[in-house]
Image 1 (tube, each protein chain N blue to C red):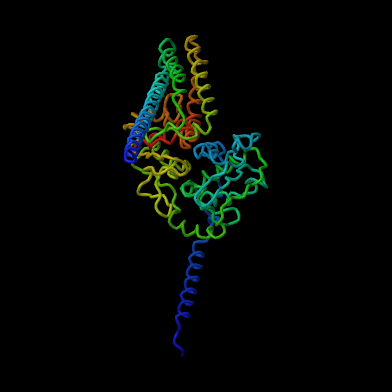
Image 2 (image 1 turned 90 degrees about the vertical axis):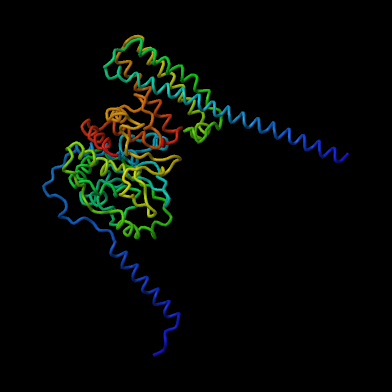
Amino acid sequence: MPRPSWLRILLGVCVLGAFGLGAALWVTRPEPLAANKLPADHVDDVENGRELFLVGGCLSCHGPDPAQNPQADTALPSGGKPLPTPVGTFFPPNLTPDPETGIGDWSPETFANAMLRGVSANSEHLFPAFPYTSYQHMTVEDVLDLRAYLMSLPAVRQAPRGDSVPLSAIARPFIGLWNLLALDGKNFEPDPTRPASWNRGAYLVEAPGHCGECHTPRDIFLVPERSRYLEGGPHPSEAGKVPSLRGLVGGRAYATSEDLYDAFKYGEMFGYDGLSSGGMGQVQANLASINDSDLRAIVDYLASLK
Amino acid sequence: MLRYAHRHLAKTTALLGFLAAVACGSMAYAQADVIAERQKLMKEIGDGMKALAPVFKGTEALGEKAEASAKLIEANFSKARDLFPAGSTSKDSDALETIWSENAGFLTGFDKAEESAAAVVEASARKEDADFKAALAKLGQTCKSCHEKYRKPSN
């Protein structure tokens, strides 16, 4: 038997490497929800869906830009302005129930897979520019209610604009590996030692509100660092920083919980000028429009963060 | 002769350098000055808005006190609009470059702010609660829409 040459060894390493990579990508392939994860007896609550739509600030990304599309109804999520990211530019898609250009033909399973698993309608990994990393913690019932609300909106025909992500085809399969770090598949866990309002606030902040996407710093793999939850970090697109949400109340920013509530509810009208720049202006407008009990819950929770 | 010319040149250069340094220094000083001055005016506007909050909530009556706050807001806007000379930003300032690259929009924002503040003054003088609330909401919206575009995220 001839001794293996270096060339053969190299070839062997390459074959093994390719096999290993293939196996890793296969293991982390898009994994839709099992059909039995969807409650069979769920009755859609459109009002709850509307509340989640506001808490999530869906319009902030999916609402049309009047500068580019002056005729579009800005109250409908018919597709938002371009979202530049380090990997390319995404165009937030049309979430109205138009069957061809929106989500009209999405089944409850399809919608739940996007929100909870980051899996697209054609069973590919979604890029985490869409914050499924937060929405994964929503309850399935809330996700179904949100879909019901979107389906209740007037359909807008708005042709999709293709994302401009140069390495999309190569990068997409690798998102599964990233998901190993960023997705835990766990539902929000209430803290039984805390009051219901606090737990409601914690859920709204963590899951539909996806506050941590900007307010939690990310590690070198761009995964939010759980150990530094809501501690603030660099601004994703502009100069300056995203502030920490810890120690908000009782410190320099807001003397009392009531101050923080007023800042969310009334913003600059009451002289709270810290919530307008850096994209927070739209978030404040959304918060001002949610149910009062939910806003109080969010304030209860945030005021407790030290 | 040549040596004299050299010395003369050296003196002139030194003098010019000194003048340039003084000019730059005083410009930087003047810039720090306008930044501090407009920040003071804006802070007073914010405090004026805070003073109107209890009136909006109905815990304080609409009257002369509210009118005085609204007048201060209006006056400060008209002073502050001239305190943004081109490029006047620094690490202590939250002013974004868009103030000067989209200057027309920035100044229109000031016009709207002054108009809205005048409406708050007027509604306060008439003690018209509904008008006061509507005008204050509009004023808050003008503050917000400028800060969204022309101000750095706060730290």
